[in-house]
Image (cartoon, rainbow, N blue to C red; front, side):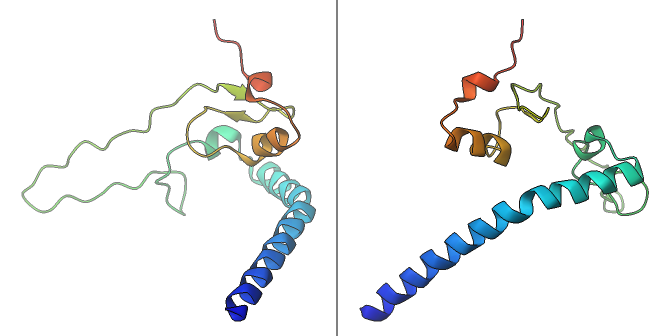
Length: 120
């Protein structure tokens, strides 16, 4: 059993190291992304668009129908209004995984309600 305990200890240490590296490199990575977004004229709207993008241009992929069969109308992604806004203008709809910016703030003792966008 000591092998299992040793391995679990190593895993814990490595996970801690990985978290520390992510924390150190996060701001630099965000800055690199912002520079590239500016260079290519990419906006947040571009990033929030269809998930099915091709590498060429900005068109969406269209599935080919089998010969003799009509294409099914592709389900379009519904745009959901943001429910939360971060201190740097980040937004989140409240759906899916909690974004890193909000998770970090929650870890600092903040609450989701502090970042709720008033609708009305």
